[in-house]
Length: 157
Image (cartoon, rainbow, N blue to C red):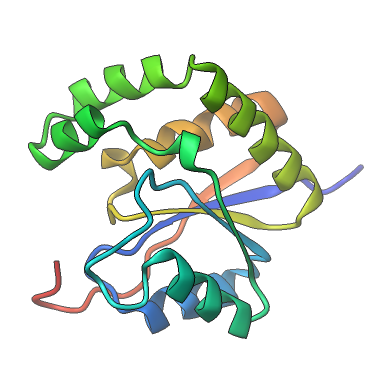
């Protein structure tokens, strides 16, 4: 019997890039799928180009699936701590043709690429849309989901 595929998730809130990269490498991740709608970051090392370069140095691939990012109103709800609203907004977003297409692409990547990790900002996966993505892939593709957490740096946002 084939071994179940793994899908990891990670958020980079309160962590430096090296800690996130170390965590991904230790978990055996082969591909990071960035599920942020906006890939620029005020945090050094986490904007799209910097992140992709850092991952490449560790032998980890990078793909950005923008249509799986949270719409603006969902990001605003999350920032306000309105996680029920985020869930409703994001559930509706997942019904869009673009999101469905990228969910299919993610499924294919998980099946082909080896251990894949969804990346977003929020440290707590229960407060992030990436948890909803992971649950869909887990249910539909029978993967095992594990949420990673790099060490926190005190005083970091």
